[in-house]
Picture 1 (cartoon, helix red, strand yellow):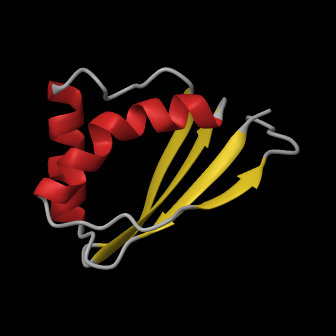
Picture 2 (cartoon, one colour):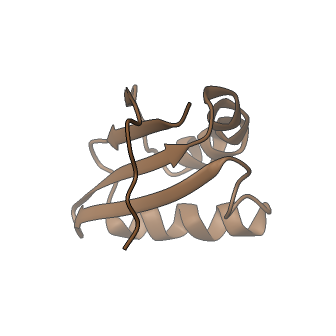
Length: 91
């Protein structure tokens, strides 16, 4: 069953987001196993992240790479809002 993970992190600016993406790509984790969709929204001063994952296990595996990167950027991701996916319609 797929899951939606929503993050609203205080102080997660667009600049820090772009740096996190750069570091994830360098670590080979830019397109992690199990993540179907990634959406970044918000303003330059604060972004929100919404991801759709195949499983909690895939998300937790990705977190082993993501969390040290976020901490190095002084970003506390907090706890995500987690919801089960009922339906996805593309296009």
